[in-house]
Amino acid sequence: MNLGPGSLFSPTAEHDLVRQTVAEFARREVDPRAAESDRRGTLDVALFRRLGDLGLLGVTVPAADGGAGMDAVAAVIVHHELAKYDPGFTLAYLAHAMLFVNNFYHCSNAEQRARYLPKVLSGEWVAGMGMTEPGAGTDVLGMTTTARRDGDHYVLRGTKTYITNACEAHCFLVYAKVGGRVTAFVVDRDCPGFSTSGHIDKLGMRGSTMAELVFDDARVPAQNLLGREGDGIGHMMRNLEIERLTLAAISVGIADRCVEIMVRFANERQAFGRPIVDFGQIQRYIADGFAMTEAAKCLVYNVAREVGPDVRNRIGSDAAKLFAGPVGKTVADYAMQVMGGAGYCREFPVERLWRDAKLIEIGGGTLEAHQKNLAKDLSRHVRG
Image (cartoon, rainbow, N blue to C red; front, side):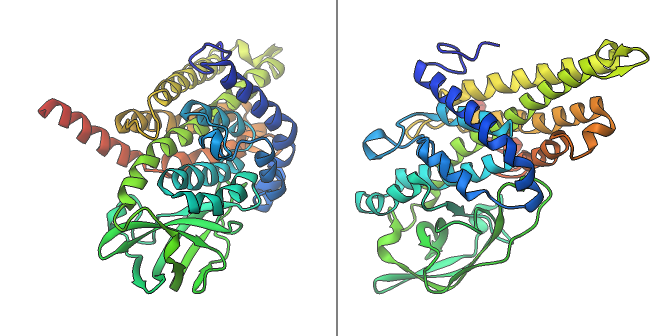
C-alpha cells in the first residue's frame, strides 16, 4: 500500500518526511532497546529525550510556540511507526505528547506556556496526565479528587491510579472537582503534599511505567489552574478524540509489524519439505491478518483528517478505536500461531507485541465505552 506523499497516509511531503524520520529512528534506536526495557519494566528516559531532539514531543503544537505545527494525521504517523518496535515506549510518548502537551497547550495561557513548554518540548521534563481513579475510570464524573481554593493556592485531596509516566514525570495535568465541577490543574512533582506510589507492575506496555498520584492536601499554586474552574470536562473531551486515534494507531503499528514477521517466518520455516506458507491454514492467518490491518489503517487515517482542536469527531474517533483496538491483539495472536513455539518465546518480539496489544482495548476508553458512545450518538442523529 502506498504510504508516500499525496496518499491517505501521508497527505503532504511534510507528513512523508515525518514518517521517514520516525521509521528510521524506530528501526535504528528503539528496536535494539525494546526487549531490555520490557524486561526491566522501565522507561528509557535517555531515548525518550531523543524524541525531543527530533522535534516530536510537540508535534501538534504550533511552530510559533516551539512545536512542529502539524495535525492529527502527523500524530497518528508518529504513533504508528514507533509502535512497530516498542508499543510501551510509544505509550509513554502518547502520555507526554498527547495527554499532557497537546491538552495543556489548548487550555493554557501565555504565562503557563512560557513556564512549561520549553522543558516538555525538549524532553527535559517528562509529563503525564491524571484522570483515572481507583473508583472512577470510564465514569469520569464519578471522580472523588477535590480541590479547594485557599488564598494563592488550591488544596488537592485524592488519588489517581494507573497513571502512565508517573514514575519519571516532573509535571502532570490533573483533574479534580472544585465545588463539584471538574477542573484542570498542572501539578509539579515537588508540590508540597504530592507524592507517587511505587511502580505498578503490569502485563504489557512495560517500556512505560505506571503508578498512583497521591494528593494529601497538596498545595498547588493558583497560577497553575488551567482555564477557569469547571472547564475540565471541555478540556478532557477535546483531547479524548486525538488520544483515541493515537491509541488506535499504536494497535495498527503492532498489527503491521506482526504481519511482516509472520510472512517472513512462514516463507522461511519448512514443514514436510515445504515452506509453511504453502499450507492453507497458514495462508488464512496471513491473509486475514493483512486484510484487517489494512482496514484498520484506512479507518484510523481517514478519521484523523477530520479531528483537530476546533473540529469535534467523537463518532469517528470512537469507531476508529473500537475497530482498530482489537486488531493489534488479533493479528499478534495470528502471528504467534503461525510461529508456534517460536512465537511464544521471548527470542522473538511477537510475544511482547501480543502482551502490549491488550491495553488498547482498555486504556483511553474501554471497547464497551466506545460501543455505548456510538449507539448513543448514532441514535441522537436518528431522533433529530
